[in-house]
Length: 503
Image 1 (cartoon, rainbow, N blue to C red):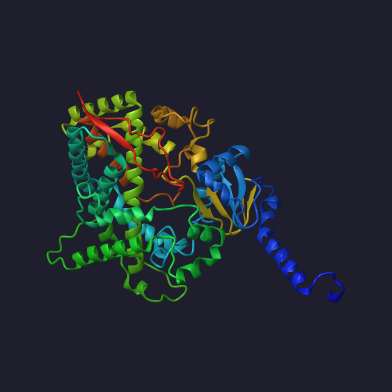
Image 2 (cartoon, rainbow, N blue to C red; image 1 turned 120 degrees about the vertical axis):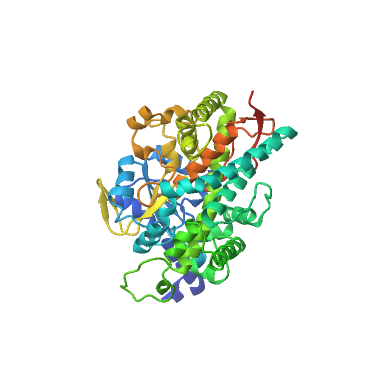
């Protein structure tokens, strides 16, 4: 029969392979049409991935506005459901948490990070989270305050030198030095003094973790062909910088070894110590299926120590930098914060733990900064089983994303969203607004575990600085600030500011 065709058998097979490949690439594209969910047109091989070039958060915002907050899109062949309706967000992240417990997990992130809280599933996640959470209780934070205040004093001393020399400075570098000193001392008992040593390996290695580009070949392969992640990992490639991971792995080992060799037994009750106390050696080996697990394994200790060390450095540093930037651009708001700081010092005599928790307008400025520049522009959950949420059918295995950035810039919720308006977070405004309209730390039981420490750091740093100085822009300040295309609040390039002595 094939001999009757006007072209060779080879070309028939090539054509057949092309057709089959095309069908393979586009087969999932009917997913959302069957569910009655709108969304942008996907393209073979890439889906909607190439549209991330404009900024993934801007792609989210464009679709959020066009498709009425709920839409489907594709990363390669992988369908993703974006849910921006606040009632649905509440149900998915809180009410139906048992069906949406887990985050999306990428293969190819390395063996260590497969044991981090961001990757752990179900009971394993709950078990590890329960071991870490006590670190951030009010009592523990109060004990940490002395370390945070010391680091904030170091930050002020550094700014005093910049003021004396009359030079502009990269607020991002100074903020990173401050937050690295805080998380190293409060979490791991390690004194770094990275404010005076900005090229400390802890700092340079932490920066490598956040060197992310949607058009990096490795990232493209992982997003478009997630099933190849394991193969890339076997070949020595990883989503996470291998050199930085090794350095922090060794740093954690050193911190643990120092405690084991501490003969006087005077060990700080910090993040690392709490995890060590929860260590269950039985989990270090193969655990029979069905066994009830208690405590955490040595691999989980290391993975979560690295995760919290790095995360505690980066996101808080970015938020401190962006808050300083907002205050420099909005001097009237800065005046109000300064008046508030002066008043609490006059009342209490010092900027201690209690004092920095009595600065409501400063807190409003921080919250407004996090609205404008959320640390995570979106976050995800994975649906475990076929589920109906307020009439929306979500099939098992579906990746569900919450578009934080578009929600934070929805003019129906936040009038004039491009403007810095701390008054949005007055008591009256917050009570009148849906609580799920503000999601800088995620939502529900799987939100950011370290948010209370981050907030305390920001209050201490800003209060200490504004006690003596005010932030101002200079000819090197880039306005508006540019963010990297990372789905976070990483700043593109330097963020140059100056400080002036308060008169």
